[in-house]
Image 1: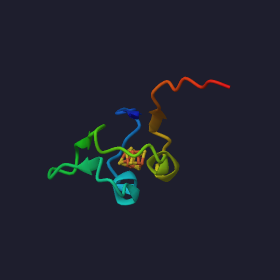
Image 2 (image 1 turned 90 degrees about the vertical axis):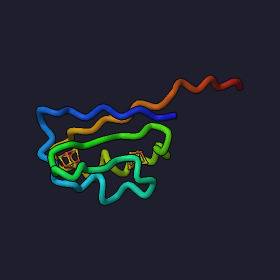
Image 3 (image 1 turned 180 degrees about the vertical axis):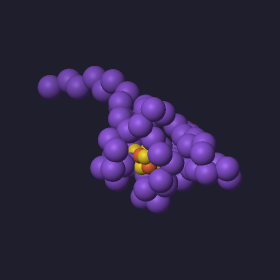
Image 4 (image 1 turned 90 degrees about the horizontal axis):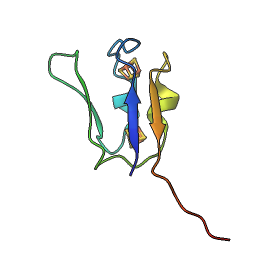
Length: 68
Ligand code: SF4
Ligand code: SF4
């Protein structure tokens, strides 16, 4: 399960990240000033990170243990 970190100081609520999120994990509130994230919907695709013009989003994935 992914978690994202939104830098609220950088975010200008442009909606670019919500537009590319196919899972509707990211949504802009009705007031246009609130960005919400639902980690249960997040597919860990990274699209929002690439879409943000201000680099306000970071995604951290859950630790995966790999055995050779
Ligand atoms: S794309 Fe970046 S600046 Fe725009 S709403 Fe998303 S986090 Fe905020
Ligand atoms: S990583 Fe993908 S699924 Fe998760 S919030 Fe960003 S765009 Fe949506």
